Length: 352
Ligand code: ATP
Image (cartoon, rainbow, N blue to C red; front, side, top):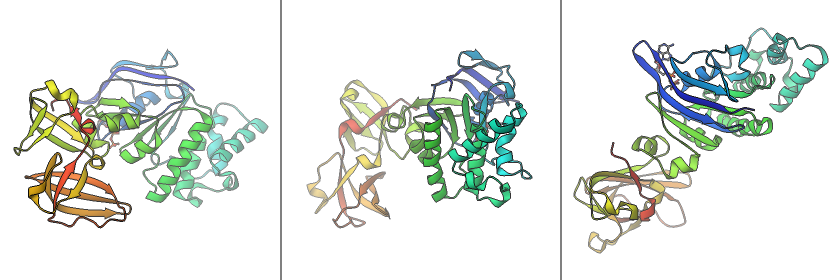
């Protein structure tokens, strides 16, 4: 186990800054997700921690030791790639044994360590198979066993579940979390799947254009996104923009809402975010009796199992509301509704 500290790290390919002045610390034993859209620099950052790329500037420390100039094989890091990169002509056990053999281990110790790693990923029974005789999920486990068997200080995972179908992927997320807890290794996991990042990690770093735009616990980022990008990339959000004055926000369409208490002093162009599940809807007999923060008309609705999503047209501004489906009847399209939320659930965002 180890602490990884990335300080002011940049790397440019040609004229393109793939990683731009990134500073982030990965604490001992933590499970971190690096989340961001395609091209945001996640893999490049991971490859620098691994030692496959070297930063132009900045420092990377593992347990206090500067490693920018230490080659891959000396960093004591385990890595799992998207395509698993297993040796096709070797058995499962030989694939897992490879890293230990390179280090000179053999005999009973080697055999026992390989068996332990395969037990950990629940593949003991398939030790003699070749990779082509395994399912995608099983191959994924072999790759994981191979990375863990050398007892790395840090485990780096680059979209390891992206080749699996949805059901298997969800199973493997649970499995990966269990294995990480059991081994206790500091883990950095690259993904562009927000649900995966939310469900699997202790902390998330969000990347955009080579920069970390927010870092924190999943709930913290979800409840208090620091930017419009974080609010809309991690989960869905209604963005309300307009002009603030006297604790109210006059939206671009002329309607006005109350700002949260801390918004009392802001003035000028301003924006807030609110999560769709924090927007409560009630159907109105007619538009004249409306209360709530905003009023509108149901424009679209969709069902996904236990949840209903409503899109409400509030004077030309669409606001999304997600509600738990209960015993009551659904609100029909075209029906006037009022929208209510708790003022504290509005997140004030910095100017774009
Ligand atoms: P994805 O989710 O698509 O894998 P990512 O967030 O991991 O994306 P990176 O692979 O780190 O992004 O790439 C960041 C940027 O750097 C991209 O614009 C990419 O085209 C560029 N890039 C990455 N590797 C190289 C390279 N070896 N040479 C030139 N440009 C590169």
